[in-house]
Amino acid sequence: MRALLPRLHPLRPRRGPAQGRGHAGDGGVPALRTRPGRPCRRTSAADGPGTDLRPASGRRLEYGKAIATGTFDAHCLLADAAHQGKAELMAERLFRAHFTDGLHVGDPATLARLAAEIGIGAGQVPAAELRARLDRVRRLGITGVPVFLVENLPPLTGSASETTLLAALRQAAAMKGELRDH
View: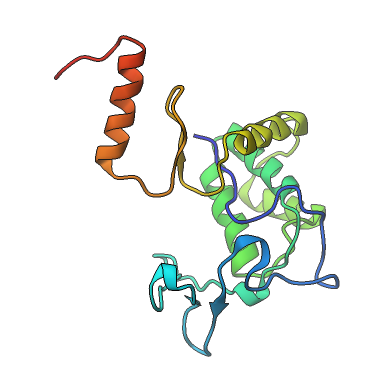
């Protein structure tokens, strides 16, 4: 499975703090409100009242610090990390940099520093290869995560039940003539 940073914009031009910071409603991010000493909460009725957005680690998500930027270079760095077996570490560090630390994840110097922290070498996955992957994601109509791609079936986006996933796997196996009843 290939990792792509959700709700960030790989093709948006790089911008720094002087040009603007992320804000509620930017790029499809739901409106958020914060109260001193409290976690960020969604204000969208679709997500239910007061949905806590803190990760299980207890780390605070500081959306007010997030810098709106293009993330193509961050996606390239993540692809390089995956190539070196460190995708999970790099993704966690990129998310923490963006959503907690307020670092500019579109800035090449910041990305170089983050790569050094994780111990990865950049430039191993060609940018053209990543652009081709992102183009495929767009063609498939994928707009969220997680996404499950099962042979020749439409993408399953969002949280899917075990029943849905098993049905998709069985359908793909049946199409290939490999379905066995166990």
